[in-house]
Length: 218
Image 1 (cartoon, one colour):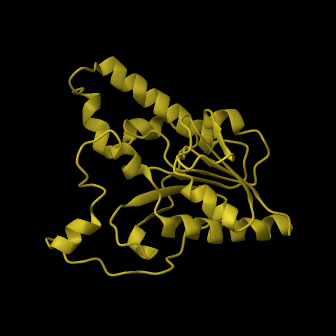
Image 2 (cartoon, helix red, strand yellow):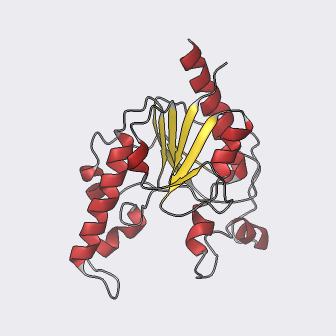
């Protein structure tokens, strides 16, 4: 069976790319930054430069979302120190534009990982639809807490592969599962917070890749 042509946008870790590659697909990642694994299957560019290149499936993993998500809406009325309201709204327009271009790309199967958006972001997304699902790493065998929402077009919801039981709230064990959110400020904090857990990456490759293969072969 012919492998899928898969684009993994806005990814520097290479984790999702490697998961699809392990199943034999023709997969490429891209980002404005180099890939940390030094792969020659990573393109340094704006993902929008590649949208018309005939992909079977595209997963955009971590598009800039600071101004789109609910947690950042407060900055649209009272900007953080050193920023202006004009800059905040310009950042919102830029982030919404990127999401819109990816969401409306000429690709039959699209998945975009992004937090739940506030109304100002939704109003700026062409053909906006609510996220199809929100998953947790512990659904896929990972001892971690990190709600991850997927906006899906032409793809099914991910099915849990190995559900664990999170520790009780307030325990030391629970805090260790929330280590990503509790990470201290650092130059690499954004990278740690944006990495896709291996269990989720494997589920994406197996479930979405398998689904797309059946459709392409039909």
